[in-house]
Length: 153
Image 1 (cartoon, one colour):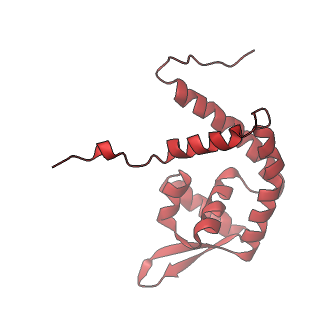
Image 2 (cartoon, rainbow, N blue to C red):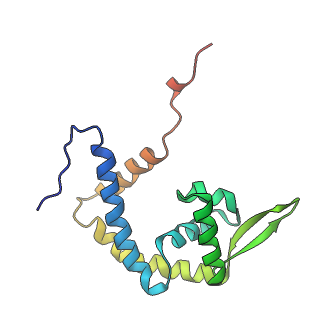
Image 3 (cartoon, rainbow, N blue to C red):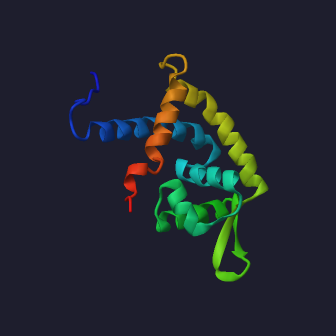
């Protein structure tokens, strides 16, 4: 059975992106299962490795999650010893989440476990197409501000 979407349908791109997400998520879930983490945990670890200590409320938009979901993920990461919450100087109500050495070690192991599976995801693409796909998806997910969106006074 082939899985095709009408290229002319108004929601074709959204449906294709959803299918691509499900496929990628299934592969990553397979990679992370032996490590005892889920994709949602890994997403937060990625942000913490890239940005360093990050205010908890900033993790939600950075991972595509909501505030309640991030709170549960950070609770999980703390319980597993992979991250800690620390007070932010000057605002005792705000907590920054920081990856622990154990979290960094697990992040590195997750990267190593995921790499061959991620390569399988794009193995059927031609030379250079994986990079083109990554570039297109990045530009789609994070569109640059268009000059035409500004009003001219």
